[in-house]
Amino acid sequence: MTKQIRELVKNSKKVICDCSLPNGAIIAANSTKPDFPKEAKYYKFVWPRDAMYTCFAANILGLKIHEKFFKWCMKAEGWEKSGLFYEKYYINGKKALHHFQPDQTGSVLIAIYDYYENKIEECWKFEELITKTANSLCRVWDKDHFKLVSQDLWEERLCFPDLRDNFTYSLAICAKGLECANNLIPKKTWENTSKEMGKVLQKNFKNNFYRAFGKIDDQRVDGSLLGLVWPSELISTKDERMMKTVETIEEKIVEDFGVYRYENDEYDGWMYKKRMQREKGAGYWPLLNFWMVIYYQRDGNRGKALKYYNKVLKDMKNKKCIPEQFFDNKIQVSVSPLCWSHSMFVIASKMLGRI
Image (cartoon, rainbow, N blue to C red; front, side):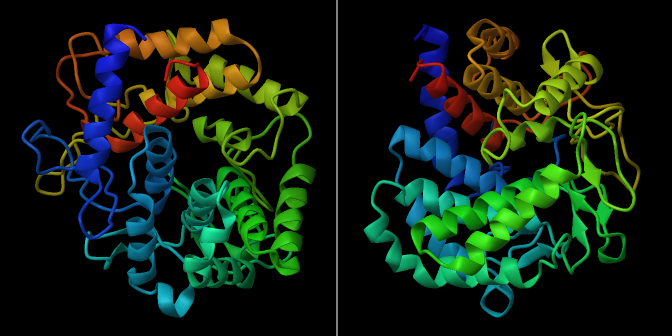
């Protein structure tokens, strides 16, 4: 490791510890820390999705935050009744927003499996969490779509049961989540539903993958489609459709090896003042850069992986915190540090053999 990477690993540990609170909540960013920009949006919320990636990184770094988080999940508002996880939560477990984002539920199951994969006999302490969550995910699935109105991971688009449409990333994560649950506590219903979700996704794409599909398709390319390769592991890097998807990502939402979320993204993470948005256009997301690192490293193209990795290191010169976004001007200020960004740095560094 270079000195810069050593320092970033050290600071990533600190960021993850700062975002892992005593009650088990894993927050997206600790907005109360002195380094957090006053101009950036308040991010002291729990997104189970972000927490999953943080759990992956914590596993790599040997940080023991997982079981406290799993206990927190069981106390989250509405889980005991519905068995599902929603958009985001306050630290105390109360819902901050009520949209159903299917991948939030699948993410919790994946995080549990990642932690207990090599000690499955210990997962029984969370049998209720695994069982109720997996059963509930199956309950709201109806052959080729979810029974509930669902929202995408970027919180900007809805899918509807009558249109039988799905967000591609979300469905892949749910399929993986049920597969993980079945690996921990075998149950045929979970296995069958996982396979059904995977088949629905596979059969709806011929040439390349795109954002959402159903009676109405959203054929825009999206950086989250990298999730089909990892962590869902539903699609191989050698799948021609995936290769075409990455080619399209690089053509349409990559600039100078900086990866944006999707075409014409406007979100910049600035605070809202008097209901007026100060959106100046989005920057590139380092966590997506690290996702590309993971993709290319799994594909055996280390040279390309390093180009995306080094792009962030170059822009991190003299900085300790990895932000949500990098902007090409000195006006916009990003959420920083973002725990998901630091977590993806740790994961990508591990896959590159630098941890």
